[in-house]
Amino acid sequence: MERKWWHGKTAYQIYPKSFKDSNGDGIGDLRGVIEKLDYLKELGIGIVWLSPIYQSPLADQGYDISDYYRIDPRFGDMNDMDELIREAKKRDIGIVMDLVVNHCSDEHEWFRKACENPDGKYGKYFYIQDWHEGEKLPCNWRSYFGGPVWSKLPGHEDKIYLHVFHKKQPDLNWENPEVRREIYSMINWWLEKGLAGFRIDAIINIKKALPFHDYPADRDDGLCDIDNMLEEARGVTDFLDEMARECFDKYNAFTAGEVFNEKESELPRFIGENGCFSTMFDFNEAILGQDKKGWYAHKKITPDEYKKACFESQKKTENVGFLCNIIENHDEPRGVSRYLPEGVLDGPYAIQAKKLLGGLNFMLRGLPFLYQGQEIGMENTRCESINQIDDISARDQYQVALNAGLSPEEAIKIINLYSRDNARTPFQWDDNLNAGFTSGTPWLPVNKNYKNINLKAERDDPDSVWNFYRDLIQLRKNPKYQETIVYGKTEPYLINQKNLMAYFRRGLNQNQDGAKQDILILGNFQDQEQDIILPGAIIQNILLNNYHDYHIKNGVLHAKPWQFMILELI
Figure 1 (cartoon, rainbow, N blue to C red):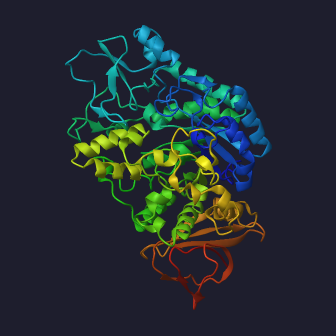
Figure 2: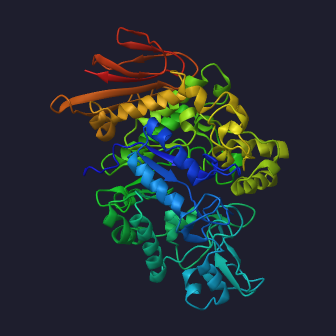
């Protein structure tokens, strides 16, 4: 594998609106990010991905862009952005922006001009169809936020346009070469500014299965899950290869693709030696327990299911390329609330369990990608009413649950489990008012547990989740182990032992003339103790342990509840 500048890094996602507010208006901003760059350096972060900060009406929290060349005034201005890029580079941190080009905002100049003249140049930038009331829609696809993917074109009773997300997010027509040229020009403009690269949003959606047609309905609304279309669509990598040639390759840029449903044959095209992305996110765990009927039908994930999903991802990519390993992001609930069994966070082992989940994911082969607040163990929030929910997808799923027969109380319980608001509550910096996020009124209420879970308290506690993550990052940077941790093979161990996730990282020791090096990572994924038979090799070092002690006798580790260890073997 060709070595890349980003391989040994640890990445970190910032949701700017909720990270740090510098001016007291209740909304996080770029100056708040600049203020916290030293914090990120202290943690050990090398790449920072900013969720959208472009000009936007915020119908979908910035993923509806009205001007790709401007910073939204809520977050600051271009001078702030230039300073952020410059100051981050001084700290050896690369800034990565969100690239949202499957769709734009209905307030973008292109769409406004398309509405003025649907048959003109800009009408061809979108998917616009003739349609009259009472006629069948071109297809029965369900949008990601509920309802059909078609809406009436503003100002035209006889035309409709496609939006696979919100109706204020019209899809761009990637079949039009002129659209692609506009997008590439914009990407290169940003890369010229010194960006390290992009996280590429919803990119699999840019290729549609044309001509438009129906699939079997899967709910009473007569619509179908859009995954049916994505499964049939072919040729997306042709667009992506072109984008890489025209933009990313010229700047040695880092790119991370959001790809939910790749076909295994496409993996080399996505993240192989000459792939169109540097890496892509591993969503194999995120889709566990999901049911197409809606959130109300989702199932709780077991430790063994989580383990199986992680190892599947590692296996299919081991000879192909790198994944971004995540347990949460801005579109998912908090990882510790999702993947740990119910009740653990309220019990005596909450801290150990949070460390175990983080360590097991972090040490997998690939690029560790933390989400803001993950490093202090932030948890899901709790709302009492749907009126307290900001997330548009959660509001849709609340209605889906009611339609399925759930009571309002049952439906809000489901929403509290899966709402995207869980990840979007403000970062908990300290135990002062509003968790130190803002001196004003936060745009989204702070999680009520901020008095107990906050950075200030954890920084000074050597046994905290924060110090554990910092130790993980420093271990990844350690020259003695970096070759094995970054490039070594992942090999599952004791795969059939229940509630145990264990695996080797096998590689080379850089300090011993290329001698083989074996590191064993293991976690007792339960509230009960269990015995773990260690391999025949002798333990040379305990590299990390989420308890102060351990009990090994006759080659058997008597693991405590939620015990996590990293062992260097001879």
